[in-house]
Length: 233
Image (cartoon, rainbow, N blue to C red; front, side):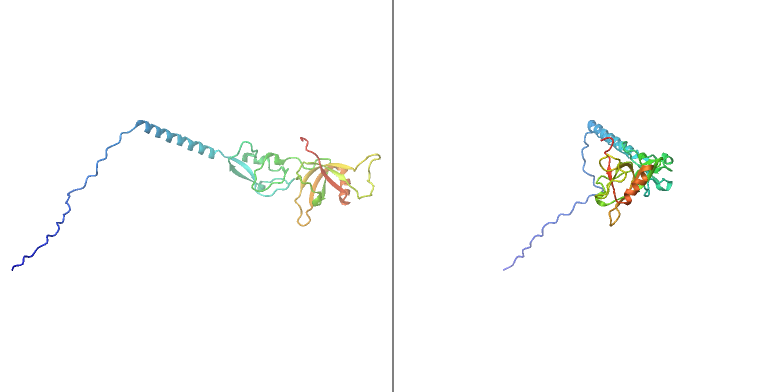
């Protein structure tokens, strides 16, 4: 009996199609241009450019002003070494000495204490001496409990009140006058509290004839400083 060999047919292999030459990209239909969208885009670009231009103009609107470069005490004469220059965007409400006017402040006195890094304002300098003709300057030491909570500033008007020791007679008091004796003065400068003691030294200008009396009160520790109310209060 003959055996017949069965042959299993191999699966057909599909050969890739050979393509000659470059393959063309698929065609994409061109969209229809819309004039309204183009016009709106151009308008937005123009508006953005205008905003940037305004911003650049604001940033570039700077003013050269005079600055303070080192500590200057009240009454000290300003020199060129005390001052510098800076270019800042200055608010119209801020009063500052322009760099072109620096010569107008050199040689004047500081009316207030000046700190490095600050702008110099016209009101911070004066051509007048802080002690006027016919006045004397008396230094007064105030203990911590005698220093007023209100900051003492140059130009502030005060009363120097004589407070003798308990039971002592009021020296030089006019007959029939009731109450302690007082002398008018004006603050020229006030120091910071001394480390350890807390004592504040205040330079007070008084009339020349009252200077010796005030100095005697200070020596006897029989003086108190009282602030006058502001004139515009």
